[in-house]
Image (cartoon, rainbow, N blue to C red; front, side, top):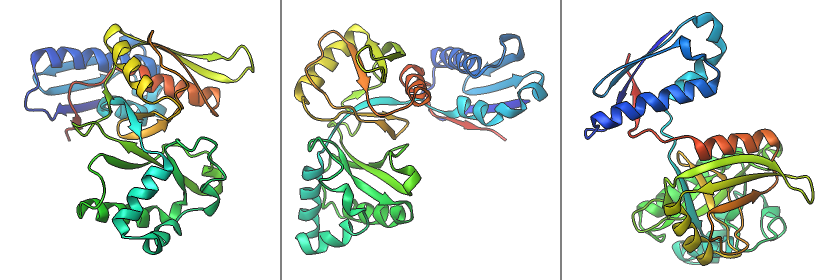
Length: 281
């Protein structure tokens, strides 16, 4: 099977070309494709990826496509708390009465009863059929510039109440450049481990020296608040900061399975492509 991709950046360099080939190769190997079955040819912004013995990898086609176009843009974002976001929305609506119409789109038990940390960025749970209505309202308020410039509303990739038909809505705070406070940090290592005290699943991460300095500043400024972990514009976790972390080593705990933790490790360690990519047909 053959796939052709092209970098969309007009400033794509020869170094970016070489880096893309390496990232493609590493991703395909992680997916389970044998090295001798991978052939990658490149010419400036254009790439041709051939997977030999296509029948052998027929069930991996979707995964292969994802490997070739996923930018893998990872960032740590600061967040708004539920109460802070609620106040911003009340101000945008001009009072509590109109704000209630927005709240009606959410499961009422989301508020106060499901959030043990009131500084958490979880705004609430909405029925999946209400997602378009919620999106339309927020888009309208942002278009009218009635919300703070740095507020970002996102649906979490996997909701704790997914089986109940409820989607998880979280609120992020952008840095001055519109991105996460720590954008594309270098994670040297991430692995799944078992907590020695309660046998729960956790993720251990180690950052490089530059990211360690920024992480110390960010965690110091957000003690008892949540920091959102965002991969390609999707929130996959928002752990609470318990204390300043100065050595670049962190333990991420939460309610997730070993398989979900392994997926998070992939997000943390997946090297970002130097440019967004598109398929050529």
